[in-house]
Image (cartoon, rainbow, N blue to C red; front, side, top):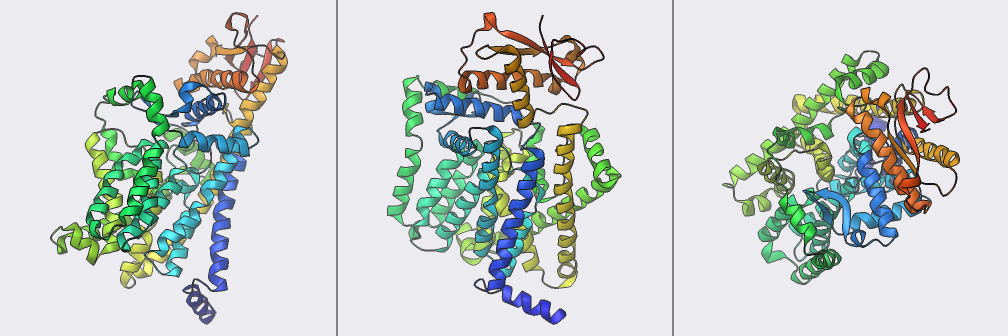
Length: 529
């Protein structure tokens, strides 16, 4: 048996062997299956982002309707303005059309799109590690809870994992190959990322630094072409905003956010995404985590121990890499030119991982965990780096075992969480405005009011006792109805003659009258008299 395993591992070092290709295909399919599981049970619902996803729905429909502002501005906000450019809008519209003009269908195709990130993870790992180690990197990424969590839905940060992988692959070719035409792609990816999320602007200085370090080896003609294409991404925005007196530009630059101690999450954010800490997945506060943990492991303290253990392991990965990066710089008297020549992998990953985080730290703004989506491909190189650095000793003996144990828990947590979320959607004690719930609610109101009638929902007095985030659901549901009626049903807004409904807390007498149109879990939609 041991001989068979040894021979099998040897064949995996040949990237052209049948065993290697079959295992890679299995890993990719496993990653897809886990993400499909998340879509099937969880419907792409994230309680903290569905408001932004409804906003993307509105902007996408406004773009399709030809409304002027949607032809040069995107849905994501930056400061008091909107992100410039249309790449995210075009992506959303394509997913929506592929999904049969439904939000749940769009979430399915987003899941399919982000599932391909496992392949890019493998290609990125192959630039630095052996074929066998690259398979391990792809496997760790395919089964990572946060990589799965941030892959299903219609939120603008999700495609960044692919854009980040493309940026790092192209940039590495620039760093390692003379006159590489990949400099064109590096510029294109760097220009595209801010149109999905403005965290991308913190990676442009790093790319510029790389160009300076490799100035003599750059392919200038392809660099110029990349700059031209990158600028072309913004031509439509420049024309549109110029026609409106640069209103959006002023709004983006006018915001003066106060200092936030949450900027310290530039340290914890990347570590969290490498771990299996579910955080606020199940809802705000420790109570929601404890309820999920009790369901998953009979005692939430067991889940807490597992989560903290994986965070410690992730901290070890980051700390080991950071220490080696510092040592490589110190040996070259902190000359990046010399360090890139002597320790190319360490220097390249170091500047792309840590320099943008340092730049963000200087802003003093809140750093959200989703910002780390962009660097997920780089983060999952770190376990491979530690394994390669410590093939012997206690690290070499125990780290593979810890990886196996962590992966088993990752799979259990991911599969369990989405089954739990599916049960919450169908049988939970609180209403969750997932895609299927919004569709059924909207259909119930359409049948009650009649075709061509404008419908509105407001907050009932009974619902004012709910937590603030649950009261907000009334406005979000009304937001969804407004967009659906105006751009899908093409109902003319008529607020004066609208059929009005109230978002009410379900009680003993709420639905004993014929005015109750829809009820689900603990809420009811009641028609005004």
